[in-house]
Length: 563
Image 1 (tube, rainbow, N blue to C red):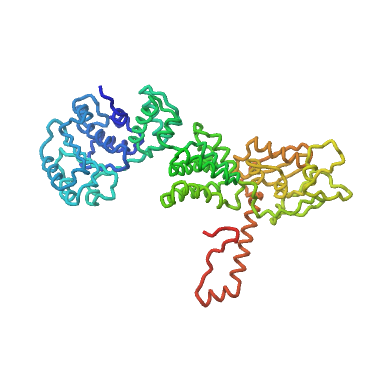
Image 2 (cartoon, rainbow, N blue to C red):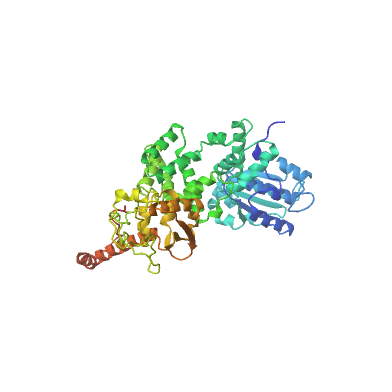
């Protein structure tokens, strides 16, 4: 027997087998059960979502020898002939190749005769929007009042091109695109029944490449089986689709976090050597950023079987949410402009460089360049150090002192000696322990932290420090930063700074926390408001507004690019 492609072999033959169109199945099933039948149906939706399949199942339900039913038997002569495409009272017309009025007149003339063997004559007109205006006009009367034995089922991918006079005479159903997870589950079932080994990540790649079309997914699965010599493996599917390896995407993000332009371009060049499709690369990059944003905002939404789940969680902790959103938008714009670039590599590399150049000032990634709102004065520790941040610490929290203040003034310790003072020589009584006045933002700038631990520190608010126990609190929306490993790194850095082992307690709060990040943002907003006030109050500006009917456009800081 000749081989039958998977898209035809596993085409649903009943409503129960139809995947992803529950709203259509429910409406048609209820209508068939209650015998409330319409004379004309219109199924709309993108390619491969099941329009023709639903039409054929509906034709079986209308002509099954057991009676009009939502569950056709599938074994009677009517059902088997419809499945085989030989049922004499079912006429499938391709409107793309039969567009003229003569073709439509032939159909309408034939509709007047009673069915030969079935209960109804069913006309399935595919891609009905391709009919000419004259053809549409000729069918209006018959479509509105057809003979009782005639049912019209129209299908189209572009309902906007169908005249409103035809739409108003049809019962319309819009078939949805299949979500990738549903497509993957269906492909898994098909492969299990076929007895073909596969890897979940490979099926996920195929499901994503199908873009909501089950037929496209099954066709790609057929191609993957042939490409992989009877197996569906991740590496072979990567090669078949020209899809980008996630490891390249992770390398690009880590280079962006490290603010490392050299590594960033090297990775892009390696992708060019492997002839990777840069349009697909930007699409996959945007999909990865979407997963990272999802992890940051709704951590529970990331499925346990997501490929590279641990790496995605790690990147979500290292990147600021606003940075992820910025990168996502740059990806979308870069993909749109790819066709306008001198070549694909130039467009892709410029997209990456744009991410590097437009890093938000409030972002905490790339710790080599901290946000400029923290004023880094020379580090001189005395009994009463001056605050280094322009926003004062919260008034309700009294500064806690980690060690007794010496009665006699201690000599100032300059920055080169900080490492010596912080070294773990706790047993030497001569080394004075640094004092702490409750200024958490300044202390964070002095700690040797990086990556997730530094982000945790920047999102903390100081609560209390006494008896070698430091208490901090974190806003509930940043709960993902309170991972034990991040807390351990922060505690070790604090212990090294104060020269003795410390305990660290971090709690969650739903209140607005006065964190270093918030202080930076508040300071920047204050400077912006002050600048706007100065400009608005300037006599020359007021005269220009009054005399020339002018207005002040958006005021941008000199260190921030204008939109």
